[in-house]
Length: 166
Image (tube, rainbow, N blue to C red):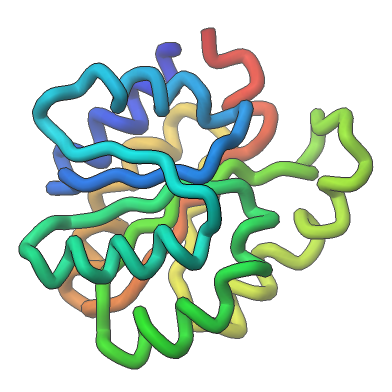
């Protein structure tokens, strides 16, 4: 749980106080931490687009929201990102388990991994790719950028970074 604790600590240091998640095995430790944390709001949601809508409302209610999901969920979310978050300049933090990266054992995850960064590039969303524990320290910088630019940012957490988070 060391990695998950470090990620949550940096998100909270950056001001994130509202968390939603779509279930993911690699995010399970973070979800456990957030379920016990009385200092933030946490809930699970069944679909990514619903979570994006709820995060938008939370931001308008003076929260700094983060939605946690697999990279496969980005494919489901493009319309909500463009027609809601970007149209209305809403700084939502995407914390994403980057499934399909080296170490992944499920072949079906690899296809989306190949295009995840391209999708963010097309959407003009800055990406922090966390492939080592040292990268986690940059999370606060990306949160601050989201606030200043009034736009979403994405934090990708590699499969190998998260798989041994015990």
